[in-house]
Image (cartoon, rainbow, N blue to C red; front, side, top):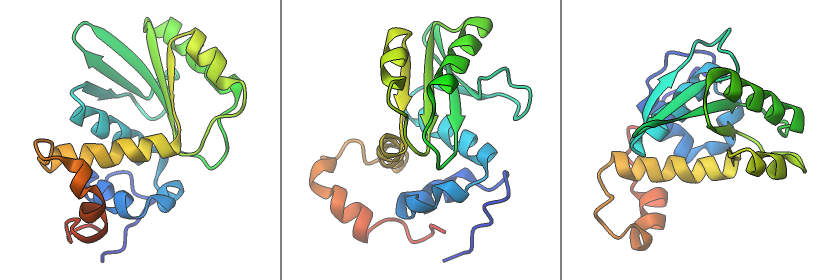
Length: 168
């Protein structure tokens, strides 16, 4: 296995994806900008057009997802700490300022108590670290063109024994 330099933000996303499917516990070591790019890349596999904003001065929106005529403003946080209610409120303000009717907050950890109620009230979808890991695995299946196969029967075998050996 190759050594992955997590401090770089320009690593190939395919290699990062392969590595994190196998070693998701190391997600906290990934460069925050690279984690934003990873989130955009995963949602691209789910059919969204994705745009990563600038790393600094992004107006509180890290990724924009476009699907049909709607957009979703996404805040991404690669952090071990739980996301606080104030961070959800900050995203809500950024959504209003940037003209997005829907939002999403993707984090590598979890959300504090009280965040789900406010998020639901204002159409903000919360994706915690465990849920994003599930989405990452599903995106890998899509990327590897296994979506036509009954993945339920092969999921454990695929991830445990047959994942491509070129992963980091």
